[in-house]
Length: 507
Image 1 (cartoon, one colour):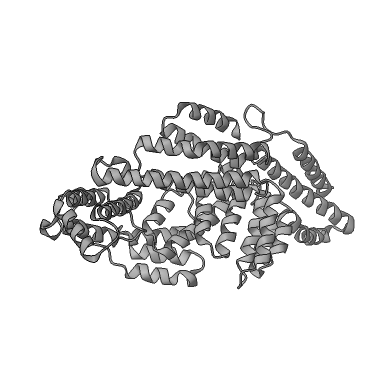
Image 2 (cartoon, rainbow, N blue to C red):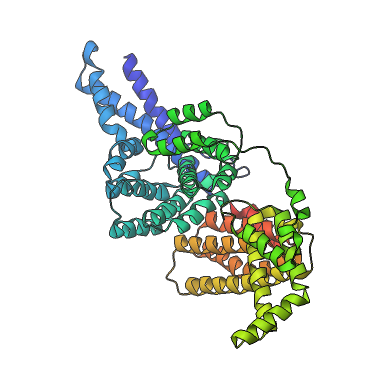
C-alpha cells in the first residue's frame, strides 16, 4: 500500500510540473530563449518523474509479492533511461564509435545538456562523433550542416559550425567562428558547448605557439576544464611566469588525453624561465641602432629587428614608435633621395627616383600599420601624429575602408539572393566583425568613426533580417550588442540609442 501511494504521488507531481506556469512576464519573456530553456528543463524533469512512476506501477502490477517487487523496477528504469536522458547513450556509445547520424537523431529527443539549444546540441553531438572517424566525410559534413537549418540555432550550433570547419581543414574559419562565441548570450549557449569551444581554441593556440593569446583567452574563464587548466599553466610558463613544474605535472595527471598532451608537458618542463629584463619598453625609444651612423642604416636595422618578431607575440608600442622615428629621419635625409635617383638612372629603371622613394614610404607605412595592429589596445596611445606614422594610418584606413566595403557588399548580395541561411550569415558577419576590429586598432578616433559608418548600415540590415525574417533573436541580439558598443565608442549618439532599444527588447 505504501509503495502504491508513493507511485501515485509521483504521478501527481509529474502532472503538476507539466502544467505549472513559468515565472511572471514582468521578470521573463515567455517567448525568449531563457523561458524556453526553463520549459525544456521542466519537461525533462516531468518525464523523469513519469518514467519512475510508470516503472513503479508496472512493477506492482507484474510482481505483487513483497520480496520481489523491485527488480522489474530497476530493469525498466535501465531500459527507459535513454529515452529521458539520451545524452548518456550518445556520449557513451555513439560518439566514441563515430555514429554521427545516430547521435544526431537520438540527441534530438532533447534533455540535458542541450536545454538552451536542442537543435544545435544535436548537430554538435553528430560533429563530435564525426571527428572520431579517421577520415573526413564531405557528404556527412553537408548532412550535418543542413541539419542546422531546420530550426533556430544558438551557441551549440555555432560550436558545431566551427568544428565542422576545423574537421574539413579550414582552421582559420574555425578559429574565427569559435572565438565569436563570446558574443552569444549565455541564455542560448549550453555550458558544455562553451567548454568544447574553449578546449579547441586552447589546443589550437598551443599548436601554433600563440602563448600570449592563450593566456589572454583562459585567464578570464571562471570555470576552466581540466584540459584548459593544464594548457593554461603551460602557456603561462612559456610566456615567462614563474609557474612551478610540479603544478604543471599534477595538472597533466588530472587532465584527460594524457598520451596526446605528453609532448606539450615535456616541452613546457624543459622550458627555462627568462632572466629579468634589463630594459623596460619605454626605454627602447632612447636606444640607437648601428651606433646611429647613417639614418637609412638605422631605419633598416630597426625594421629587420621588427620583422623578425613572431606574429603570435604582442609588439611593444615604444618599439613601433622608435621604428617610425628612424624612418622619419631616413626619409628626411636628402642624401637618400639622391642615392636612389642615381641608382635608378644607373640601372635604367622605368620609375623615377622620387617614385621609388614614394613606393618605399608606402611599403614602410603598410608594415608599420601591421605592427600597430599587433600592439592591440596600446595602439590607441600613439603620440606621433606626423611623418611615416601618420602615413601608416592613412594607408591602413584607405585599404581597410575598401576591404570592409567589399565585404559588406558581398554580404548584402548573398543576403538578398535568398540562398543563405542564418548559419552562413553568422559566419559572414563574424568575418566582417573580425576585419573591422583588426582594421580599427591603429586608427585615430575620427577615422574609426568613419570606418564604423562603412559597416553599420549593412550590419543593421543583417540584424533586422535575422530578427524579422528568420526569427533568430539570439543572433540578431549579438549583432546589436556589437554595434551598440562600437556606436558608444565612436560617440554616435543616434545609432547608440537605436541599438540600446534593440538590446533591451532583444531577449
